[in-house]
Amino acid sequence: MAVISYAFDCFVSSVRMKHDCDEWRQIFTRIDSYFRDDMVLEGTNHASAQLGWCITAAYVVVILFGAFGNMLTIIAVLYNPQIRTTRNFFILNLALSDFFICTIAAPITFYTVLYTFWPFGLAMCKITGSLLGFGIFLSTFSIAAIALDRCVVIIFPTKRKRQHNLALLLFFLIWVISITLALPLLITSDLNTVFDDDKCGISLKICHEKNEIWNLMPISKRAYTLAVLLTQYALPLISIVFAYSTIAMKMQIRMNSRLASSTFTTNAINNERRKSVAGRQRRTHLLLICVVIVFAVAWLPLNVFHVLNTFGIVEFSVPLFAICHLIAMGSACLNPVSYAFFNQNFRQQFIMFYEAAIRKNLQIFGWITAARNMRDRVKYSRSAKPVITTSAINAQFVGRGDNDEKSEEAKIDSNDY
Image (cartoon, rainbow, N blue to C red; front, side, top):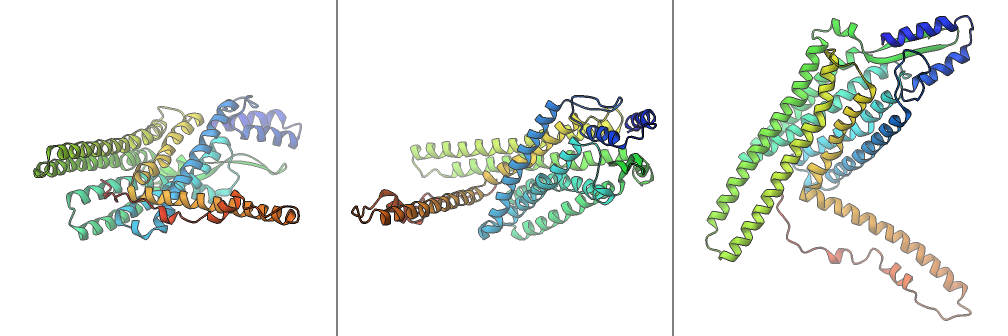
């Protein structure tokens, strides 16, 4: 910040005599874009335009993929009453928070990465600063809540009332803690004026967390950063590892007990059953390990970057921050895969959505084809005999028969671990 202000002061002193406001606007417009190939003004930071295009492409992929996956999860829960269970309610809460991150938080952060100055005013600066943190807190706490809720279901499979009460308590806690942790960001986010000229009507401001406001807070910025590292990363990671380790051990014990009790079956059937159970265990354990690894790897770089920057060990770097933030946003993209697409009920609902979309497209295509065939028959009815075309036959059967060919496969009992 001081470097930018000093560079602007040098520039202003060098062109003050010219009174060329248009030149000022052109130079400030070029400086506003962080990713540029020329420095424009000595002392201002910048990065190559090629790097900017790479970061832009990465943000577009993350935003679109994450928004689409989480939107499907939300629609599946709202559309199908059968999957509106307590456990899936946490998945819905996670999908809502990740959808918010991908559609609102990520685009705002992307804008602040590309451009230096903030043109949206003080209110938007404070609101966006707190919303970014709130979305991240809500998402990570929802992941931890899902793990703990599943652990309770495995340990106390018959205690329905206890499961329901704990789910309500976890839901209440993750929202309260998320709002509480986001409040300091709302208070400390402020505008800093780096250049202001009434004559030319130029006012350049930067939205950031002001150290002067942090000094007036009951908690310092360093203490807050460490608290966020503990509550947003360390504790959820410990909870996930503990919960899924407990789930894996309980499932192993139950599977072994079931296999040991099935002594009345023949050896061939028993061997097939053992292979099937072993395969299910491997898939479940692999999925649990992947969930832990994705969370740990996705959120570690961003948390470490904030800690190092807050304590003055590493200077703030826009490209480095963008890379760390993109890695963290990968969690919002992969969460629908980990928690919804691997869930049998959700997967069946997604297949239904896909089949419905295909039928709709085929129906529209059938209408168009039938209309064309009708036009051709009317046109050539006097010179040719009516011919029943293949397209007409296909058009008559579009959208029919699908319900008569439903799969007769046995419904798998999916307990979400």
